[in-house]
Length: 310
Image 1: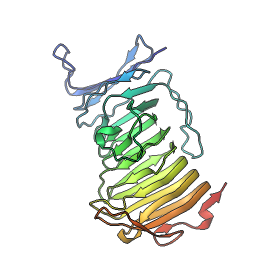
Image 2: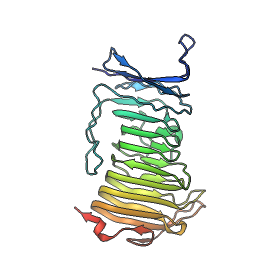
Image 3: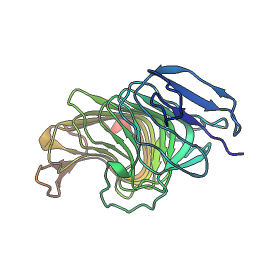
Image 4: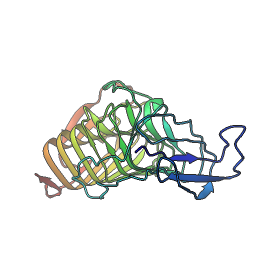
């Protein structure tokens, strides 16, 4: 049976549609014919989803303040534990988006364990842009219970202070998740979830501030986290990792010691991982940064007791 869910926001979707006023309505379809329940909140966003096995159009989303959610009646949240070590959960359906789906500043989106991608082939390590992403999260936005499918170039982009809960990547292309912008005092948080098959980086940090990652699983990867080593604008960046299960990878954290980066790691379980934390000499001229050390240090904050070989 095909399940369909839609989020219809405050702007009318055509001249014939009745105006909705300043409120938004979240629609949850209980089956394909659609018994519908609704609740309301304020927004300036227009977005329509069809969660199914067909290619889905996702309209461009403007900024807003409402919390947006989408579910399917058969949604399963297996694998949603906050503890690491889980495998890729089963999806409740698939959706190929024709355009990047934006989560408005301060808003949220619950995917009900649907697998979303863009219906395009991965282009390897060629740098993609925001328009290639599956989701763009504006400042303070949240994304939960989503699987990013394999047919995409960029996974999830964040514009600062984002929260990801139980988000999974079935196959990473260029990067799984990128903090594009963030202020020095802001923190992005990833709780649960995991990523598989990353040729290079999983979590890329270009903005300032901190990234906190807990209960995350990663398998077959290059670097779990990399603070940008040669961005035009360089900052002191910080990553806090707790309860990470990592298998078959090169390093958990790559940071720039000359810019004051730190990586703090606790409760880490690894198998066939070459390095825990590697330091680099970063630059702002685009040159490839050089590695200058690895292991516990003032920059790489952990003890051998924090790491368990499995």
